[in-house]
Amino acid sequence: MSEKNTPVLPHDHGGQEAGLIENMPDLETVRTVAEAMKQLGDASRLRIFWLLCHCEECVINIAAATNMSSPAVSHHLRLLKGAGLITSRRSGKEMYYRAADTPITEKMHHTIEEIAMISCPEIK
Image (cartoon, rainbow, N blue to C red; front, side, top):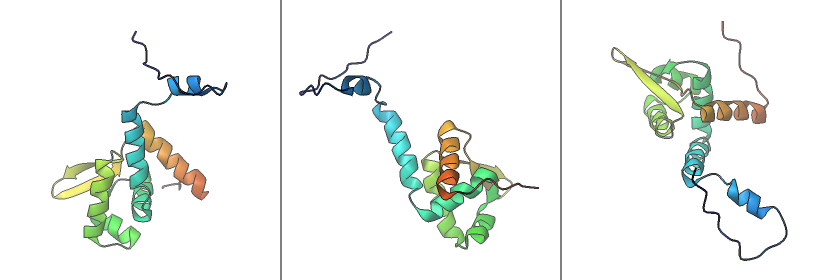
C-alpha cells in the first residue's frame, strides 16, 4: 500500500489541519465534481438535468417542456453529457437522453431537490 505524500505545513496552529490534508480528495476527483457543479450552475441546464433524472426524453420534448428551442436544448445537452451527468441512446433517427447512473448524478439530483424543497414526482 502506498502512502500519500502529505505536505508539511509551514505553520503549526495546533489544529486538525494535518488530518484534513491527509484526507483531502485528489485533484481529479475535485475536477470532476467542479465540472458537474459548473454545468448545473446554469438554470436551464439544471432544469433539463432535473427532468432527465426522472425520465428519458428526446430533444423535441425537452424543448417543449422547458420552453426552449431545440438548438438551445441540444447545446445544453452536449455540456451536460460532457460533464458525465447524462447519457444518450439512439433509437432509429431519434436520440434519447437521461441522467447518468452514477453516484455523483444521484447526489446532485437529491441535493437539487433538497435545496429547492421539491420532491420526485410520482410518475404514473
